[in-house]
Amino acid sequence: MTRGRVAVLLVIAILLIDQIIKVWVKTGMELHESIRITDWFYISFIENNGMAWGMQIGPKLMLSLFRIVAIVLLSYYIWLQARKKARWGYIVCLVMVLAGAAGNLIDCMFYGLGFEASTPYSVSHWVGLGNGYASFLMGKVVDMFYFPIIHTTWPEWMPFWGGEEFIFFSPVFNFADASISVGVIILLFFYRKELASISLKRE
Image 1: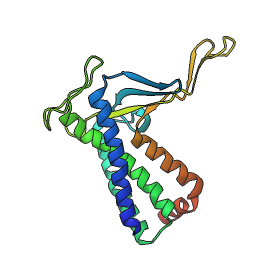
Image 2: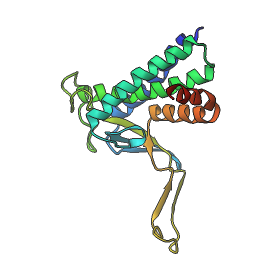
Image 3: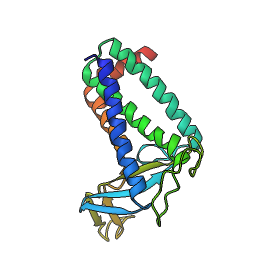
Image 4: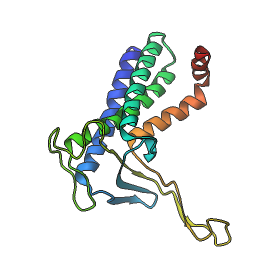
């Protein structure tokens, strides 16, 4: 099977897993509801307007448009790398980043258009495109994975934070975020040569 076909299949697989989980949470849980799996793993439903891991940078519309441009450029780059027969692992990592970005973009594009707004008192339902809580590209991203691996309190003698609650790891994220993060981390550790070649070409 060619690298291009593998890339397409992997994108589809990641998007399907991501969207199945998100729709299940969106239509089955109230906003801010939390399901305890273990002491260090919860399914906690939240929504955000920003980037991966709930970050917020700039206006919502600008962020959504930036995502579209980034996805188009990265898709073209992956296509070039597949034609050049770049290393399998490099292409897979790029695809993970692409699919993760596309997964969160789908939320922004269609969740606001077709879903009722989630609230802490009721679950959301699909109401048809154009009848949802927001306009195109203005939907909120669904997050659900919460891993409070360490949950304790800083010692009283600790400067600044003494006596305050400490949680590691506190961000709530989704499958798309995880795909992006894993892809980027592997790229930085094992494919620095390929990344460096991008910088050299720009120069």
